[in-house]
Structure formats: C-alpha cells, structure tokens
Length: 226
Image 1 (tube, one colour):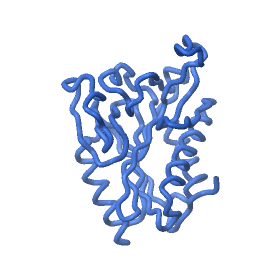
Image 2 (cartoon, helix red, strand yellow):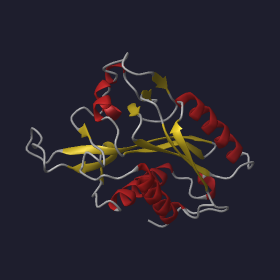
Image 3 (spheres, one colour):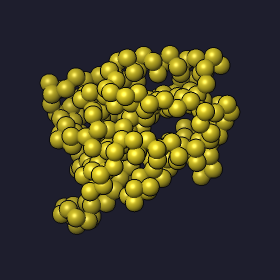
Image 4 (cartoon, one colour):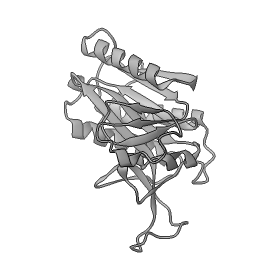
C-alpha cells in the first residue's frame, strides 16, 4: 500500500523507563487537540507502561478474569481488554487523517501493514485474520487447535480513537513481556487463541532493535519523520 503521507514530517519520540498510563492518555489527548487545531505537528510516541489492563469501548465484564491483579483503566479507544507492561513496545500514533486519507478502514489496514513489515525484519511472518483484531503468527511448534487447524497466537494489538480526524492511542508489539500477565484478561475478547512475543518465538530482539524497525517501516507506510 502506498504511504499515507503528509507534510510536515511526523515527529518521533521515545520515552525511556515506564510511563504511567493516565499521564500518557492526558498527553495524547492534548497533542491530538493541538494537531487538530493546527498548533502542533503529527507525532509518534513510543513508550513502555507498568503492568496494567485497559478496557476499550467494547469491553465486557467477563473479559476481565482477574480484576485485582493489576490496575484497570477505562479508555476511549476501540476494542475490549488488553494488557500493557514492561517488554511491550507501545507506539502511540497522533496522526491527522485529513492530511492523509479520512478513511478509518484504510488507516487500520495501514497500521497492520506497518506492524507486519516491522516483524518481517525479524523474519517473523505475521498476518491479519478476518474477524480477529490484531496481528497473528502461526505456531507449528505447538499442538493444533481442537478443530485440527494450526495454532495461532497474537503478537501485536491495535486500538485507536479519532477526534476531529486526528488519531490517538495506537499499536503494541510484544517484544519480551511476561506473557503470564495476559492470563488476567481475555485479550481483545478472543478466548481461543494465545499470545506470543518475539522472544517467545526464539528471536532475542531488543526494544532498540524493534524501534529501529518501526521507524524505518513507518516512513514506508506513513511518510517522512522529522
């Protein structure tokens, strides 16, 4: 897919350490408002969070299996429950779709393409699946599903919100999180499939390695970075 490019270039920011979730949401909302008003340039903001669960606008009570395990935050992004924590790269995307293409479906597809291309840099064949949010990998090394099909596990998630055609929230890629932390929820409401990470797949990638791949492939799909 051709890049959904715009000008001026998109700002790129990486925050070291762990970023508190409420502070991140407040900053995203402020940036999104400033971008919509023409007072700030678009931005991608890469963070890690302390262990927590978030509930999207479609979250159901039965999706939260262990409500006392980690803090739970209600959030305005689409989707159901998800986990954030150390070892997971979260990329918040504050992008103005009016400058690109005001089409939510195209935007989601391009985010998926960005993730898939990034993982391909690590020789991971990741794919989208109809009816399942996120990005998936096949696990031929694990027992098949009950119906005999190959087991698949989720390696990346997508959840966005738009305000005046400016996006916020974004994507997450599992680099090396504690996968057991996902046991407290039904990730994105999909109960029959597991969760994996680059390290779980036997790829000892660092967060810096992933950031380099994310940045290179972002330019491929979304345009120049300032």
